[in-house]
Amino acid sequence: MARASADPEALFSAALQGDRAATARLLSLIERGGEPGRVVGRLAYPKSGEGYTVGLTGAPGAGKSTLTSATIGHLRSLELEVAVLAIDPSSPFTGGAILGDRVRMQDHATDPGVFIRSMATRGHLGGLSLATPEAVRLLDALGRKWILVETVGVGQVEVEVAGKADTTVVVVNPGWGDSVQANKAGLMEIADVFVINKADRKGVEETRRDLEQMLDLSDLPHDAWRPTIVTTVANTGEGVSELWDVVLEHREYAESSGLLEERRRFRSSEELREIVANRLRERARQICTGDRWDEVTGEVTEQRLDPWSAADEMLAPVDA
Image (cartoon, rainbow, N blue to C red):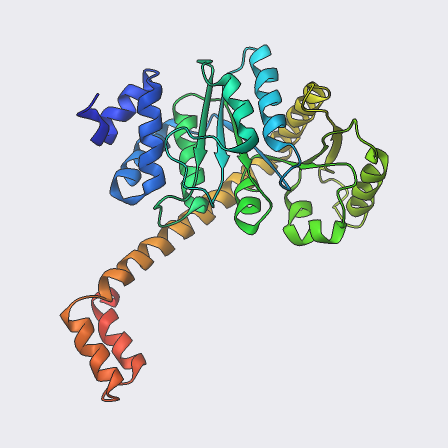
């Protein structure tokens, strides 16, 4: 396997045969980006399209990782295989490192029906917005029908990543606080299912009413999916099967209404746009180096050439 470790095609062939180490190496290539990552994407694309992605997001401390672990357990009880991408844009994860309460997910690490990977931006030029869908596509191509994408927080990057799932689950706690702040985080816009986790605490009904009021004000079309509110106690597994039933209901609605096709078409368009933009940025970095760049920069600095004309000159080979 040592020689194959640098060869995406050999790795992909091994991963198709169930080699978990090869799958991990392929994901590392995707995270780093560059031409090897693009090769992985080209190999995976024709074999993808059957998997279904569920995003889980919510404020830190909401119990997302515990809920994810409980969901894994429920899926395995149904004899379903599952892959998990645990997303943290701020942490330089290496290998299979799991931080904080994600240690709970390691209970499933030796289960051949479960594949768990922590992901950070690493060196990918497109960041998580490109690395994540490429990783999801790879896992899909390798036969994982259910892919969970769990994010560590509710910043712009995390919400964006979770919102690209086929079904998005937003996890809150009783007494979750200022609903306006939740709107700022974009949670209302991406939620297909709300989970009030830690429902053995006080304030569950108040939180449910708060969510219902926010949904009432969201001006949903009459035939649109109204996000369902589910209560869970992830530590004990209470409510997890009910949550999964709602995920299946949403999938059925998304497939029958055309919503799933619409979302995937939009995601494909956005991914293509990001790939083009990142390739252009990469090309720009190449253009803005070398002797001619130094000469043109000097001419602009000495006011012998205006910056717009200088840019036209540098871009002339690209525009030709």
